[in-house]
Image 1: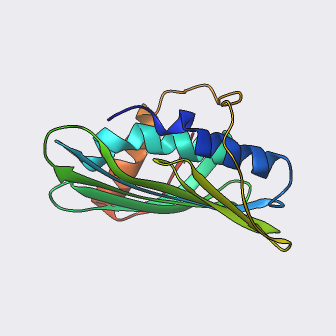
Image 2: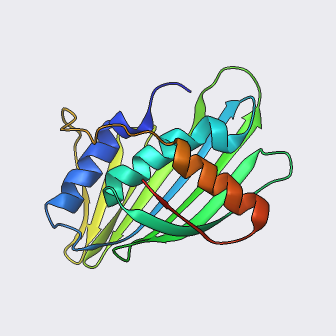
Length: 170
């Protein structure tokens, strides 16, 4: 893929809004990614997806259930982090060359507002009780250090195969 989603300025600014308390306590994080590439969606897009969700939730234990299409072109999972945050991701891979993201967005929902970020463009709308604000992007701040995603990806694949809820850490 063309670059990691965790370093995109929109995500950095959304996380800053969340950490500053502008959205209240985080209650949910939902990620959608569609990309062009070859192989299995979970293998190709999963490490980056877990990195984005981990950046939002922090390191945590997650109980989730996953489902993958028979051809591996799409994987969806829904879960609850140990501290009560709902997490979900839908990963789709369209056959082709190029390895570029076609769509990537995350929604962070807090007790006092939400933010939706198009991770591919410099657009960030912060919605709070006071109204909607368009936040300009700045220089990316501190990043969550990348962790090994092998165990989490394996657990997601196991859940998709078995249809059972599994627990993992990220």
